Image (cartoon, rainbow, N blue to C red):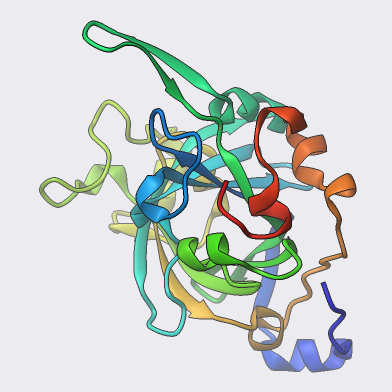
Length: 264
């Protein structure tokens, strides 16, 4: 990825003095094709869109499912719902959630769900700004976004306002996870909501499987506008962290979406 002109630390500090990075690490984007769709060529062939947040330390790695199968449109401040599908102490535990699956059916025999394809790799930060929480990221791969990133709405860098849903306040009809799948928080974490429908201060609320949230498109240059630094580095397929960190089989899934942004 081309190097951008560096900003002086004083410029970042003065841009938004209240912003505080409370978590940072690696971010990976994936899409899973629909059943029996080995060669997807557009969003219509996608079953699920996922994001993996792998913190540098402390919090568990999280496999997140993003609704509408795309990130929110930043300039339109679009709202998109999502939830934490899996939280694990070791990021490698998420691998089985991304691998190929096989289903036995009565009428069609064994059905195949293809492995999730990596569609982006970079760095992220959860940023607390007063009472607001933002998820900011910058891509390292692919170097130039292609049709896959355009369809999934993964710009080279962006930030989103993040609000975490209080499961005790219910959901609108036919919206959100059912009672059997929604988060069940310990009493100390549940208190963080203070009776509100959404919480925005404590990222540890995302450490529980079934945690639901809303992302709202916020900024296309989070470093300048939040006053933070995202330490993205140039990566190539041979050094891609997604395979090493998650122990993914390179031969078990196409890499063209990650390296060239092309459907596969």
